[in-house]
Image 1 (cartoon, rainbow, N blue to C red):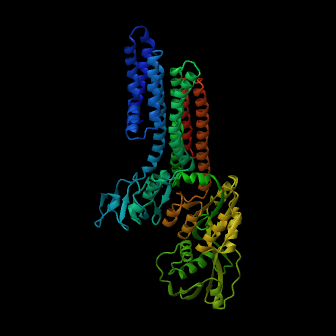
Image 2 (spheres, rainbow, N blue to C red; image 1 turned 90 degrees about the horizontal axis):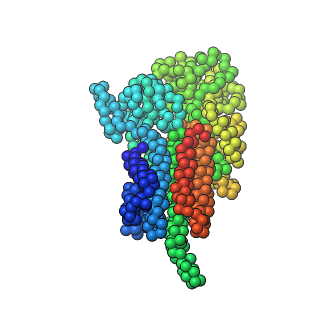
Image 3 (cartoon, one colour; image 1 turned 180 degrees about the vertical axis):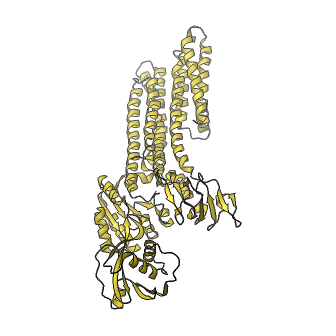
Length: 631
């Protein structure tokens, strides 16, 4: 509990204690009316002086129509009526007392939501251990570390900026970034992201980004700016409160004046005190606190809860769009697949498979192509290439090189045909690398992009959520794309697309939307940025995704797990459901109590429930949006 909240709680307890003492002392039988008035004024001012001050400031700045003004008028009016009529001031004090109780509940709820955000903000590192030229380390501000510098990260310290491990092995706690509790093991060559926590060994890391461009800085910027994008329910409440508060103030004035005048014209007693009491009750009931507080709080809590699950939503307006998702389009490489090529099979080998793989890797060792790198990785090839000479890369076909004194050809069917070498056709999904030694065919190696372990489950989860159609948009070959789509259960595949082709297909999909449903696109690459911008909601794979994709996206999945897409939709639907529950509940109770108050049926105590009680219930309901991690 904050210092301010403790201060309010102490004031509430003191005021409540005063009211209890006054109730048991029964001062009306012992004291003069003015003395009794002053005694009740003490707890009123203790608990409500800040509300009176805010109401006065609103009047001075010509912006009086807010909940502070309504509470001030209603409570002071009730006290004055008590002075004029019955000498009972308890109702007026109770209005302010219970209103402050409701405000304390609201403050606690907002604080709890902010603490969730603050836990995420804790990923910001305070310092970096920069390694100097003499091998010593010095503690510096992360902003002072340049790209390419070596930093040392001890156990228990946060990773200050993105880079790759030079020496050392450890496990990194990435829960604040991805929402996953299982530590990630890293060793030399592995990428580390700023904001994660080193849990065991000492790491020496070479930085690849400045602090301002690091993952932690981007996450913090996304979360801090998320509240600027308002959802439609929030916009409705803003417009509603702007019109509603002056309208009910005017209605309260008319309620206190018109009926007495009509009664006078009809020859009856005006009963001013009774109708003023009804007007004051009307004002207390009409206070829009429940709506003005709970709706923004719902989305604020939802953004915090989603962030703790590794889903960054750039604005609450995207919750509404996500909740109405009907079509989901996605990229293949890096989104549904790992984006890392690996040797998957070896066919028709006339040599031992390890030897065939070694020869192919050596022949490809001077190439920087991803296929070549996957061969070298599979063969565990060292950096020493004395066995290789006369290496030549033939564009679009493969390589020719001398390995161990033998002429080696390594490439596709075109390369084999060029040198008149007969090779079998392979129908397997992936890239086929044929190998020939001294003119004799020796077999082929199949290299494929691995499907993510959660990809099929992610597509199934989308279908169970009622998504009408899933579509894969990829630049890969048609047979590869269709094979992966079939394996994952994707409804439709559009393959061999250039970036402009993806945009055209996106336009076609946008024209196929039904009713108010929205189109979501999920991607991670630089060429996905235009499509992410064009979709109703663009979702980027954040941990491995390009900067352009993350910048263009509306939602970022921090751990590149496609299963988080379905979770994001479930979170959005829950937040929207809570917001509409609060709107319907609050307005229904208010309207019913306003009618009862105008008819004189509702007492001031019912008015207090209609205001404070509804606000507390709505705020407690809004807090549920924080607990979305396990959806």
